[in-house]
Image (cartoon, rainbow, N blue to C red):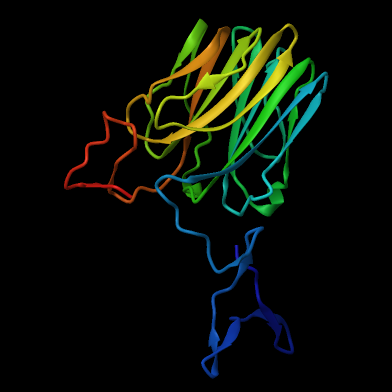
Length: 277
C-alpha cells in the first residue's frame, strides 16, 4: 500500500495528492511506497512465469526451535515458499511460528519424517526470519525460496499440487508440471547422498543436507515453466531408502500466448501461434 500524504487544513489532517516540479510547474504524481529495495509508484504487473530470486537454507540438531532467514533481496509482494523437514516428533500443526497467521501443509512420510510447506506474499510486517517449532525432533532442515512478479492475489492455501514417494531407488520421477512456474522439492533419506542430476529444462536452485541419526536427509529444489507433462527424472548417485517429491505451483497470470520451453519436445512445437521469448 502506498504511503499516505496528509496536510493540516487548520482543523484536521486531510489527504493530499503529492506533487513534483516538472517542466516549469507542479504536477500531481502517484503516491510512492518502499518495497524494501526501492521507492515505487505501484507494484509490478504479475507475469505468467514468476522469476526465481534467491534461496536460503539451514539445518539444526537437537533444537526445539529452528530459524531460516529470508533472502536479503526480498521485495514487497514477492512469493515466499518455506519448507521444513523434521525427524519424527508429534504431527502437530501449525508448526510455523513466524510469520504468524500462516498455516503450513503437513505431510508425514512413513519413515517418520514430517514435511511442512508454507507459502505467502511477503511484505515488511512478515519480517526477515522464518521460525519453525520442531519440538521432540532430533534433527531438521529448512529452506526458503523467493519468487518475484507472481500473482499474489491468487495464492492458494494449499500450494502443493502433488506429493509422491518411492522407496529403494536411484531415480525419482517428476510429476507432470502444471500452469505457471512449477517448483519441485525432492526429499531423500539415505546413508549418504553426494550428488544428483536434474533433467534437461529444469533449473536446479538449491539443496540442503541434514544429519538424521545414522541417515542423512536431503532437500533438493528445482523449477520449470508449466508444460502439462513430466520433465523427466532426477538421477541420484546412490540408492536412497525413501524419495519423496513435492510439486508446488508458483501462481502467475497468463498472457494468453503459447510458450515454447527449451528441452521439452512434447509440449514445445514452434508454429504460427507459438512465441519464443
